Image 1: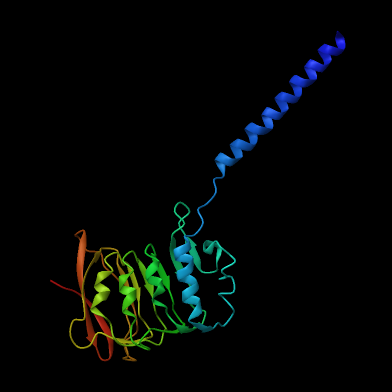
Image 2: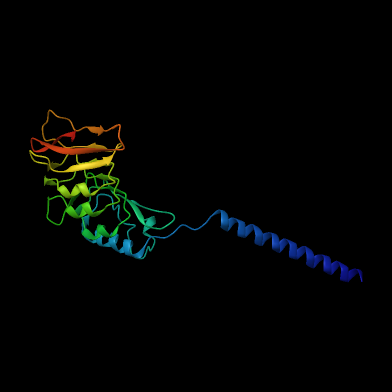
Length: 231
């Protein structure tokens, strides 16, 4: 009889311990939810971008491999933890050589794009790649130190959420007339290029009293020399 009671107690103790481990494991899963992986369509867009790169200074894109399915873990890529959409592409300062692929249009949720100090060209060579103006969620665009030249496209005004734009140290020009008119949030910050050696590129911020302010890029010399508030 005593042996039966001892066995029963042992079984109950084992059940309690097992239940405790289950509850602890379940609680850990609740506290540390899995992050969403990148979307296959956006991963393919990034791989198409890489295909047009001729070389890198420090193999920055070595992690961009098809066998590495989660592009959110690739160098220079940041994704939304909730949705897995690519929100940032930051490969500035890498001296990449090649062409900017129009496949970036597939990154519909991209908010931050930094290609500064690279030797990347557009589909039409040194001409500003107009397809970048289709990335409507962009808040930050940095093309400083790139080889682009010619006119800044008026389609840049399509980027209604843009808060930071850096075109310094390029040969881009708005011409001698207004190239584009913008309506932007009051915290918009722009860094503009100027070919005049006596005019230093500068960062401009607007603290408009209203909710939104309109701006126009005015050409000066062969570069964008000033940013003025338009009526």
